Image (cartoon, rainbow, N blue to C red; front, side, top):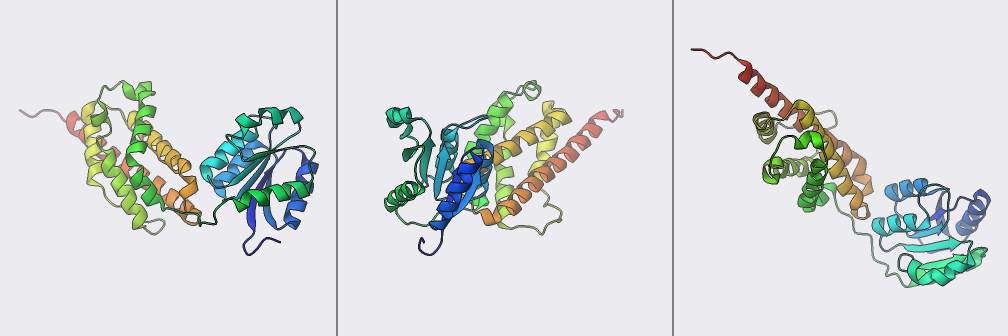
Length: 281
């Protein structure tokens, strides 16, 4: 039995019988085992939980393979032990290339004892330092410029939005304050169901977009792409996220972005109504 807290292990293999048998043996050896039968399920588990060890089959049906899972684990937890299982002995000949991504390769069939011994041997070389987490507010604050750059790339690939010709500074002029508002909202959370705070910057953004020639559909699409970029930033920093606060934080982010869009749209419509008034002599 492993000391104190059990080591979290993710086992990935499409062979149901092998996965069940190896899982039982690993549990008996003191590991807390989560299992996945394909790459997609493995990626979901990596995105929602923290693992110290990954044991994955190399070849699996569908999109991706064991190295796809290893890459995701490396991103989510760079300190995790990653071990690939392969039914092909010739994979040992290609070990140099594969080992640049994973810690070791075991050729099937292998014994549970050999697998456990290998895991424990690899874990001895990993310093027992705690996982460093960060709040969503800190991550977004640190990654503001990178997220805005990602958003600009998405906008540059959208023909609808690009039909209005603006330079990058004018296109994203509203975003620094929007991110500041997001960070403030995350650090000073509102009770669920509360009306979001009024943002003068969002109002000005709506009026500006009207003067720049945007349609309402363009504004909605820009906001949608912004949420995608924000959530991509969070995905890229999953290894730092405090998962106990993740769901509430994501809900606050979505609510704040939607609220600012609503305020911008209200200002946009008001500007439109002013433009539509008849001139008085």
